[in-house]
Length: 238
Image (cartoon, rainbow, N blue to C red):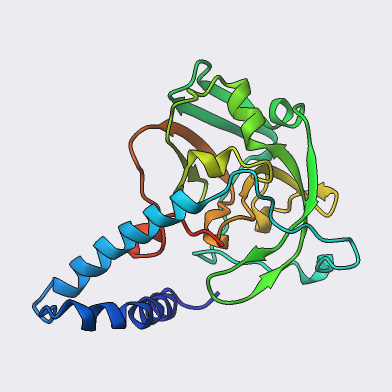
């Protein structure tokens, strides 16, 4: 993975290029310390709001044939850190908290007993590359129904075994292609790809597909995320 500094510069350049016409139109002086950062933060909130409003929860991301998918040996490894968490896969559980009727610890076997979806969808990285793996897992909407998630709740927050964290709007979590993924290429996930369970969300950029998930919280308070707190899109729709 590119260095974090390179990623930040890439993303900042992209945002500034998009915003430069707006900065000119304002006629305001944003050269003061903190002025540009404040403006960018407010504009980012606006773009997130727009993306949430135009998101269609019934529109599926493209799915591809096995001939079109990326070969297993081309299944690229990526992440915010090169370190791999020390996870006891045999005894792993997903802790569920927040606005749910049945909080607690859920095993891989319990989650995998729910209806399974297999799909070949594109994983798009903010760095500019993409792959089409074969994913398999439980639709998150089915799991949320099982734990009795409050239907009026607005957000989902997740934590991971490598200290990564991110969050999502509820409509994206209820999208039929959003998975609690435990398989790739019809085999259990490897540790490097997020075993025993990761999020797969083909309607969003790759940094939303959190690996090694350990905790899921249903909430009405909008959470942040590792990259999102550094200026990346919170909604991150494709």
